[in-house]
Amino acid sequence: MSSNETPSAVPEAAPAGPGSLSRVLGALWSPGRTFASVAARPAVLVPMLVLLVFQMVMIGALYAPVFAPFQKTQMAERMADLSPDQRAQVERQQQAMDTPAGRAIGMVSALVFGSVFYLLQLVVWAAVLYFVFTLMMSGRAQFKVVLSVALYAAAVDIPHFLVLAPLAVARQDPRVYFGPAALVDAPSPVTFPYILLTRLDVFSLWAWGLAAVGLALAYKKKSQQVMVAVGAVFVVAAVITAAIQAATAAMFHVG
Image 1 (cartoon, rainbow, N blue to C red):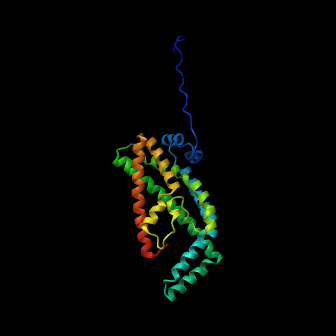
Image 2: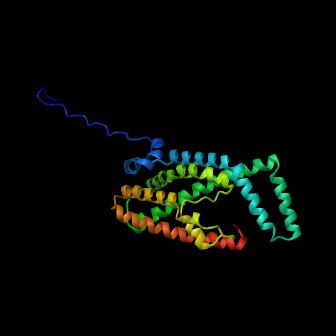
Image 3: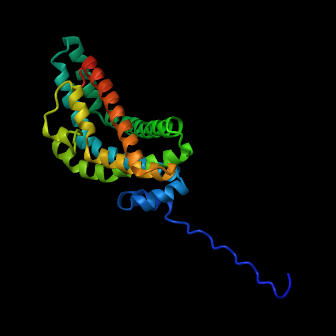
């Protein structure tokens, strides 16, 4: 290089942006900035661990005051339709559950199955969104990005559970809704219209809106188009799951 040449400027590094952990809560109060960061730098492990730990803490905290009494109430309601032999078997099961070992097994089972089912729901939801936007709408985004968007949108569950917990403890019933389902009594067994009403929850709609914001940035599509597509997926999924749950409740008389 001659003495008359000016050294080329070294490009400045792009700002790192918020970390994976701070983005979990950032998705709630700054979704545009947060999901722009998620689309550029998707993360799965950190938000998954945060949601999983929070889920397990909430299940553990609510098991004794809410889930265990609720299970006993449900079993007592079903005993009226059982034969004497079946009723005696249920009573033996209740006695086993009331022992320290039974309560420990019940809590561990609730933690394991509740957490696995929760994460499975998020992965399936992400897979459906990926199928719709990538395969049906010819979008371009990696599945990791879509899964990351779904996980960060699920941060809504943190304020949801914090609001739900004291109400569930007061009622000794985990079925607390923040939508039209709160205005009607739950039928036994639950019916398709009632289950559909439970899907129209403020927090569910909030999570749907956050997912739409994230997907619009990930796929670089218009917000209105993404809102309509995600809304259609939400409605179809709600109808299908409500139909399955209602059929199962009618078959096994699950309240």
